[in-house]
Image 1 (cartoon, one colour):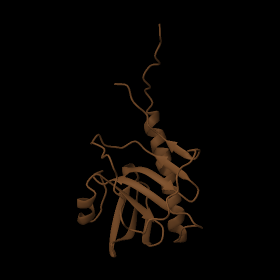
Image 2 (cartoon, rainbow, N blue to C red):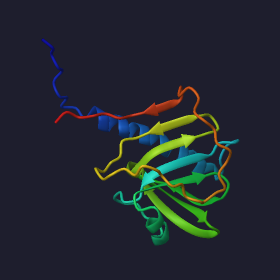
Image 3 (cartoon, rainbow, N blue to C red):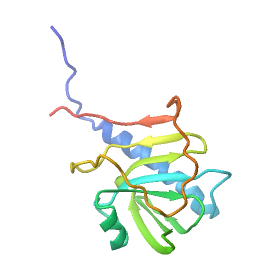
Image 4 (cartoon, one colour):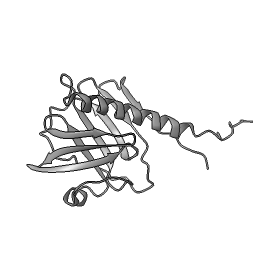
Length: 161
């Protein structure tokens, strides 16, 4: 006879997701305060383009109707970080664009310089595409494989219904 633990009345998964997204906010806040990335750090941030509060130019939404990855590395401007979102200027195919992205829309954050990655549950129940096309805001750096995953934090809680 197997006893299953009772469903928690405390939403631990949501609390952990929120805390890890706050890590992204703090990192971006420090970059915004100095106006530059420290050392060789750069970030890949993937987010749901249909999530509430996301604001991107129409041509980017048409190209990335579900999920998009931006690279914060060489050319960015006007980085502003709020309590629940960030705003940034990036160049896509030589055309400037302003983006506003809520932290709740982020599905992954990766800093290849130190092989640090956070993965989040998607906030919506929509279908997930098989492949994610990356935005072309910066020339891609050389690929850095995640060898042992020791710095990867993946959060994927499943609720019993």
